[in-house]
Length: 270
Image 1 (cartoon, rainbow, N blue to C red):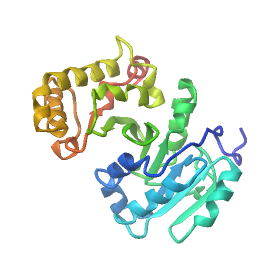
Image 2: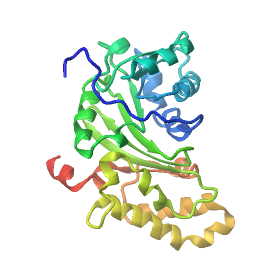
Image 3: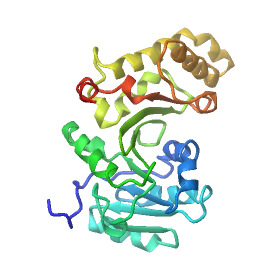
């Protein structure tokens, strides 16, 4: 594909207001330090879809962290860019671009890239190439967040990647009405969703979550939050390398090191 053409394919583009709130909460929390320290506070919303509403929400949330943040929404569909353009304002713009991070951000290096519900519509074999294309263009210390969630953002999972490769898998769940944490399986990012089978570590991790959740069912009388936090403590005691602490667990969020859940072929190559 020629360098001046956006790299990628047009996705369905469906989205909803507040759908990506759990991802944004993490970007404004554990990842906020990167944005605060950045010389160029550039954030890219890659593949925002048919409506730019979640890009606008990202901009409003991030400028509470860094008032001079520069959020750029990229799409490979010119019609979607034209639809979004009237919402542009200082610090928020839209342009034509794909995984090559071209268009209005060409030559710049973003500190954060959010790609939500984009790669889930690709083949699994396309993931490494897409990840690599973005990672090569990150600022020093920058992160790519490859996320997937359900239609209204109750079940969300994302892989965080640095320039060196995948770092972690995060799961974030709406605790009210949660039956089992393993329900997030159908919303795993593309790199993992087909690996939720016996013999794969992500399958073991989800099973470990469900087993610990069931074991701590008595905590439900104190609320789902207490049950979820007890589940996380059990996972840590069982030597799962959790990278966060109770401040995130109480939100229904838990992050595990990538090496612990990576697909078998990828682990062997790394």
